[in-house]
Image (cartoon, rainbow, N blue to C red):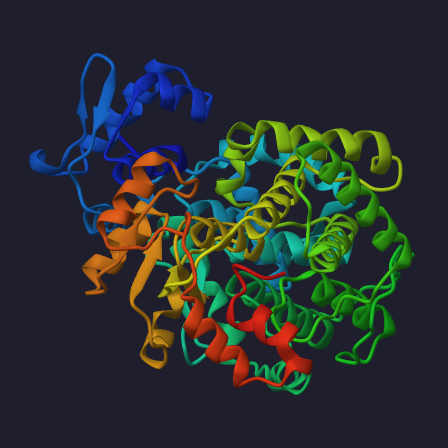
Length: 515
């Protein structure tokens, strides 16, 4: 029997959880219990008895390590792996961007898929491509290619290729360890982008303008830049028209075409940047953000002392959402799945305001509303924190900036901590330059990998519950509740500071007390 992507997803989730009920899995995956049982039985054929999943009447138990799962996946070949029509289309899209033409018969032979399946796929492919204003074009004697909406084609390829690559400290592309056989095959066809091209122009632009993208945004931008260079230079496929941007965007000169530069600039402005802001302030967005803040503030009985900071964060995030929706892309984060359940009242307030005040102007998806909810929850915590006895913390996560910011603020709300850095799992090399007390993560998978790589760490849940607070307290994290300042030390510190700068001094040295 062969495995498929759902089987591997299930194996990954079970390895991370340790054990879970069949009903919970069925609810999460929207699959029947019978389907899940069959999937587990298939997976068990690829593990030795001591590592197999144990199925009871109501739950599934896993005793394997993450390394065991990775070894199993890496040992799979294409004849062990069953691809779906969607995966084959994604593969074809990437090939059409990476190559000028594709021989479909050879592609299906390479994937160990029958030619009869190829015929069935064609109708499905044409329907899905048409939704993005793309079409499958035959080139007699050469093969096929995909033509039409050039931007949609590139971003489609980038979103899929992002899943299979990692970038190391030297900026070199590497194969993601958990890649399935199809993804490994595609990775081998992608390497040449880095091997035959330079990113000097892009790197200079980022460095000279202090643009510090997070890991996910960096991967996406580099992929897009290299694909665009190839398409423009070798394939003579350029973006011809620009959309009417609803927001002001600084245009960077990276390509020779105005349309190419415009799309690149919109993409860059929509990414997560921790350096010099690319957000060009928009008065209308500022006004909408202010109204949203007032609406929330009145109903949760919390005063936002950092109102201007919150207003900037909300308007900036809305700016990114509008651009991403206009560009038809976004980054999915599974931590957003539970926001509605964890903070139902706050989520409902954000959703209500959006539906009645914003929806006619622009679209926000469920995950974007969830992120807005986390931004508000972060500031609710920020305006209630107190105490000072910090442990220096590095958070290791693959989540986007807004999600990791909320986690950090949540931690600071409960305990006296200083988040000195938030890094991606693939940026562990940065640790040698940081002075910290603990590594924290909220992912079982990341915690397991850190342990196996020799990095002691503390794993807690993303949303803090009583057991997390008790666990961190046992690890000597000092609670922020009801802490006080030593009066004499506080007065001495003030005496050493010019009274004209007292306000800045207090906010800087005692951020959990003064706003």
